[in-house]
Length: 324
Image 1 (tube, rainbow, N blue to C red):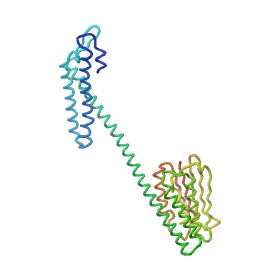
Image 2 (image 1 turned 45 degrees about the horizontal axis):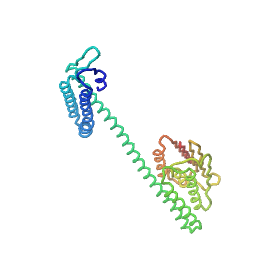
Image 3 (image 1 turned 30 degrees about the vertical axis):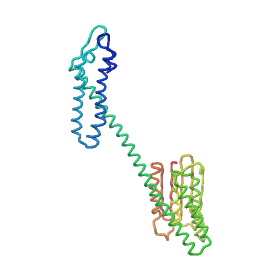
C-alpha cells in the first residue's frame, strides 16, 4: 500500500512524511492482525481448547475491528488515505470503498496468518513424528539386540558346559573363542554399521567355536566372493542364520556340509545358508533368532531386503539379499 501511495502522490499540501505516517499506521494494523491471530487466537482456541466457534467469532470481530480502525484513520487523514493525484486531476475514494478495501486487506492478513501457522505447525508435527518414530525404532532395535546377545550367550555357555562336563581338552580353547566373540558383540558392534569383513570374522569365530564341541568334526563350507572388505552392514545381522543351522541342522555329515555363501558387490549383499535337516530334532527350524533378525531387517533395511526361506523335507535354506 505504501508503493501505491507513493506512485500516486504528486505535488500538493501532503508531504512524503504524511504518507509514510498514514500508511505506516495501516501497516501496523495489518501486522497486528496477523500476529494476534497467529500467536493468540489459533493456539488458544483451535490448538489448545478446540473451541472453533469462539475462534471464528474472534476472527470476525478482529476483522471488523481492524477495518473500523483503518476507516477511522482514513476519515481523520483524508488527504493521505482518501485522495490521490495524477498529472491532470485529483481522485477521491469514498469512505465505503475504502472500508471495503480495508476489510479485504485485513482479511488477507488474517487468512495469511492462518495458512502460515498451519503450514509451520504441520512441518513441526511431521518433524516431531519422525523424531519419535526414529527413537521408537532405535529403542526397538536395542531391545532386539539385547535379546540376541543373551540368546547367543545361553547357547554358547551350554556348549562349553558340555565340553567341561566331558572334561574335554577343548574347553579352554572354547572359552577363549567365546571371549573373542563377546568382545566383538559388546564393544565393536555398538555402531549403526560395521565393516562386512568384521562381521565375517565374527561368523568365522563362531563357526570355530561350534566346531570345538563336535568330536567327529563339523563340516562347514564358508565361501566369500566380491568386495567383502569394502562394504558395511548392520552388526549381528547374519549370525542367527548360521546359529540356526548348527542348532537344527546336520553338521557332521562330510557328504552334505553346511554351506554358507557371502557375495558382496557395490550395491547388493547376497547371503545364504543351506543345511541338511536333523530329522531327530523335532523343534521347528527358525525360532526366536530368525524372528528377531527378520524384525531387525524390517527396521533397518525397509524395502531394501528380500528374505527367502525354503523348508523342504530334507533341507533348510535361507537366502537373504540386502541393498547395502
